[in-house]
Image (cartoon, rainbow over all chains, first blue to last red; front, side):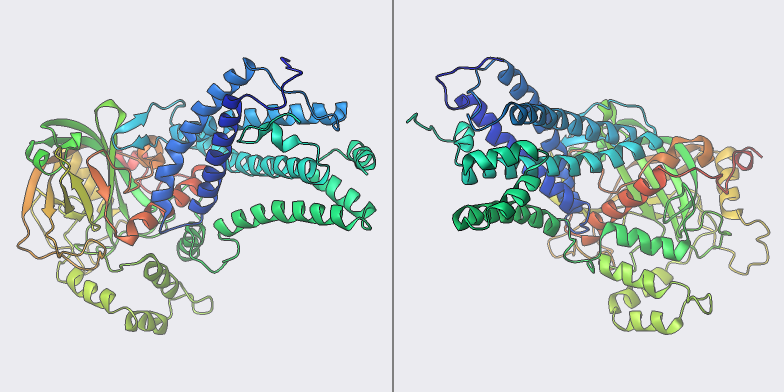
Length: 183
Length: 380
């Protein structure tokens, strides 16, 4: 890993990607959970959900490439080697979820033979053949992955709050949207 | 303090919650830390609560797509692999020959002069896929216009000029009112009377529907899109529209005496025989609404004087059992619209899209049982 010892924060671009992803993912999870229970707003919400999912796929892929090419600040001294490996693994897990979930959504619409409309006439090509049994499996997977994503987000949110607020070890400042000066 | 928390954290690293609980319990005396721990828990639970609220779990009485589909299942039963409504059907295909006159109404490519491949499905309303055909049953026609470049227009129409209901709640309430009573096995007429008493729009719409007697078969029925939509032309102008299919086949009244209906598939058999004899045709008619015409109420017809534009001819020349044709596995969602068309404010549209999708998802994963209109029925 590229660790810059003098650096306390993730790079500005990494922080921008982080907060952009956070906003997009929370929005799409909220839309997703609301739309499946809604009659009146179902269509409006699905029409946002589809292009938003594709946008997240694009953002996450670019973000992953950028992360690979960026220097990372060291972990806080309060984190044990085991905590560090759990944090790294959960980061990788989140990346995987954020790539797989939009692909499952795209694949499930393909298997259902829905046009994958982004807006107006603009639509994506199908990535799987028309097969409703496959659709049924992917549709279920999309729900399971959404819950998994949400629970992973809650764990991440809780862990950062715990470190930053209870242990006061500056974990949050590493990813703070603003510039944090070294003491 | 930090050291101790870290030790606890090391021991119980699996999830922030475990850490919070164990370290919170061991540090009860330290109110400041306990307060922050509690705050962390409240923040996490608060975010979870927002999502539980968005998902409607705090409001279990609300009408959802799942409850709607449950209602159809209570009325028509669960028939593995079949649609929850309009369960009995047959697949058709053919083409739409656009005459180009629709281009001034909408920029949708379907209206450019030319030929568009069509996949369709004729159906009877109700959840029973083996129901015996009756002339007064509502007939449906779902169409999928396969536009160039992968774009699609889907529409699901029925043979009544208006719809009997104007809100999803009314639709659901009527579904409940017409469900068979568990004791008598028949719908309770008092429940239906109570429903009609509180839904004058349904009474009014039923009069309009009854003033258009059913034709003898699927092939000489008109079909109506019912809900209003918006068309957008190339200059960005929007107009409210409704659409319908006017049959080229001559009208003949339905045989309602019941004497000459030996076969339970007689409506489908006549359709099949008709298509095998010669292709069936309909004109696609766009009715253009004016400023005060309601776009949000499918029970109210627009005045007869509204401009109607014949935008092209639908030709259906192939018929096939659902068992061997992809139309079974298509959701004729009325909100699959091409660029140049948009939904109106009719609340039935989003609800139809949501409930069709729920029905589609449920049946997709189920074992597919044979269709009443079998492949051999189509060939005989």
